[in-house]
Image 1 (cartoon, helix red, strand yellow):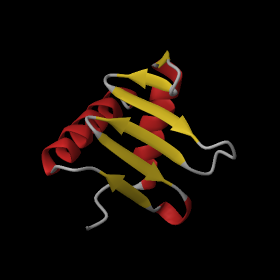
Image 2 (tube, rainbow, N blue to C red):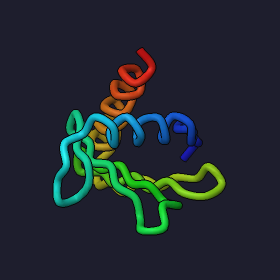
Image 3 (cartoon, rainbow, N blue to C red):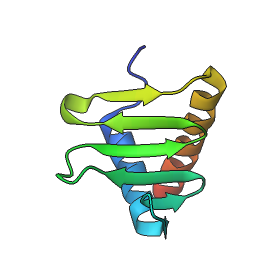
Image 4 (cartoon, one colour):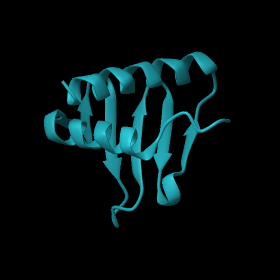
Length: 87
């Protein structure tokens, strides 16, 4: 998979959700995306549309999903949140 999501994009979305999201038992939820981090804070997670995105060291990320449509739906949500964060 080509690297289509950069770390700046993912961190901007993560921070926007942390700032504006509703607290849930899983993390903060905003616009259908839940954001949380591991205890040491080095790995962040964005979850929604049946997809779990994990981002960590060296600008790497991994997407867990069963159907391409789910991945596409999550990326659209992330792009929307990113645009909102930079408005």
